[in-house]
Image 1 (cartoon, rainbow, N blue to C red):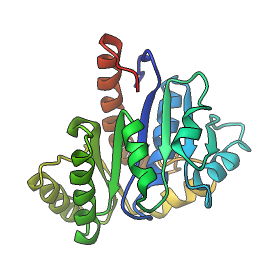
Image 2: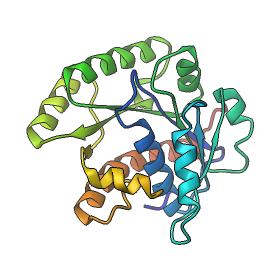
Image 3: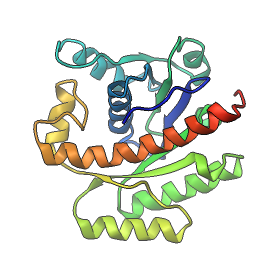
Image 4: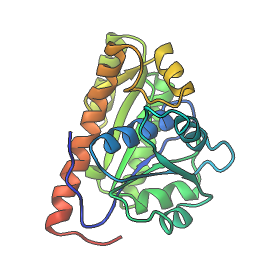
Length: 228
């Protein structure tokens, strides 16, 4: 899907209450899909300790067949946004915990994606974070929930029902828990670039939902764009 360019970069952040729910997975995949759509992309890794996305980008750069993704680590969103350069999309990968910086990232973002697993232990804190973000002034239409680490269709249906009863409709598509995704990451690839077509198709469905959100924002931004 080709996305028209906005007057200013679209800033999309991936945040959550905890680690291990798919933040870096989504950040890397969104960056790859956007680059394939001929957007200039910058991936900001705010986990200065682990730098998961930066290490992945470095591994990716060793392959001649893979598109390069510019990823850099920063200790704060303010520092990162000062050095984004001339890009169309900024994807922010945040640490696996909440902090005051999390809400700074949210306020600086045009779109916010919250990945979550499907257990009540994941869904409940995700819902609380959604409410908290709204209470700090983040508009609901800037918030998206992505279902990750799905084990079966029944589990996914239950999670969608849970979220919808709280007033939040999750994005279309989901990411199952599969070894093929981990293997792809180990080689510097994203979840849309595995050697298994069904896994790529499953990931692409979720990525298409994210890109539609970006496209909606770009269209609105190209009409009347208010600076951050």
